[in-house]
Length: 523
Image (cartoon, rainbow, N blue to C red; front, side, top):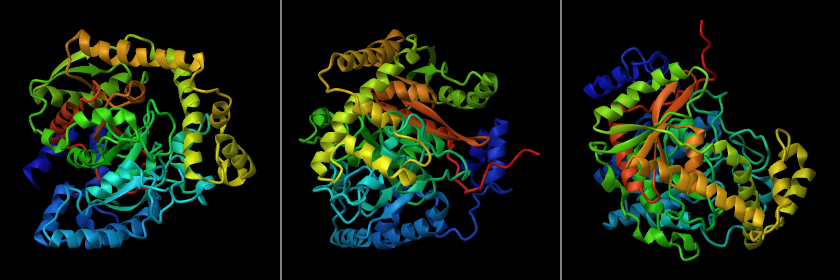
């Protein structure tokens, strides 16, 4: 056993939950154990830089690597059901990347690297783009790639398929089942197959965690990258609104929507983010992306927490078993301090729950307007939200067997974006999450950023504000994956990535899934 692995084991052993995780996912020698018959174990937990090294040395080609990941999808994804569709052109794309490499051309760190993207991101190829809905299965192929997909292709990535999602990015019913869509069925959590994978980027989070691709793209309006990243034990980055283009992504709400990377390591997430960022003339909000970093891997500093002044957010921990939960997180908080960070206990003073109705109202107004615009441009048979509501009613057995479409119906009742009710709600939620929220907390104690156990209230505040948020895996607490969150000012991705990377290197909390049917019951 290496010294690094020994240190990691000792760190995780600091709690009984960590010890349980070790017992479940590592053998007596502390080695990762793989399920019976799992193909190409050499791909498990491999990083993008390591894959590039193998291609550089000639040990691997993009084609062979793509074949290996496709075989893992074929065999492993029968359990997780995270990949909705395979790109029939994947091997041809890989061949082109191999030819370029032979000529001495390597486009980026993503050259020849297989990645997956969520099925609400347009691709002008032989794959479908449906948001998981049967209503768009026969829709015309998008006329052009989403800007994000185009950026990935320019970087040399091999888009090998589309991932399943919570249908319509989890904006259809008042209740839903994360990871379920009419088209794709139910995506399963890779740790315990009967547990919630969270969503809406369920397939992207699960596929990356299950080592079915080097990395994946998710999208978020309110937690849809961060929650499945947390739940499936991977790194997720929800970028600042405007850093990544929304063109060609099936929308919910333009004041919160963004795409972002999901990967097993902060390094790989930074590589993917570097490729995704860019100024898109069709999405005016990305004009600030011209000032963004071109390469986020420059901020991967092992001592990146040294001298950082961070606000520690603990107020949103569950009210039940709070002391036990605090005890679980204490070693990770200690790790932040031992890495050189100064932690200041902070509290968000506005009652965030009081703006819940305003948050929902804004999403409903924007969903109706934004989706109708997308459908009109797509040229689909169902051209409006009203058409989709009718389709779902007429296909209840396939589309509404598990939950309804109340959000669709309520959104359809909304007016246009000039209505006072919409403008007032929008102003209220932005003030609460920006001026009186993140900005105020940072300014009060002169903080560089915020950190705390990843949870819904925190990612929701950042999502509504349009500010960046990163989650880093810690491991398992019984049947639940856990994470540490770093968030802060708009366009502070360089600093947050620096903190997240340093923390990751200190803790090494990521645990490889074993696809257990369920969490073992205590004796």
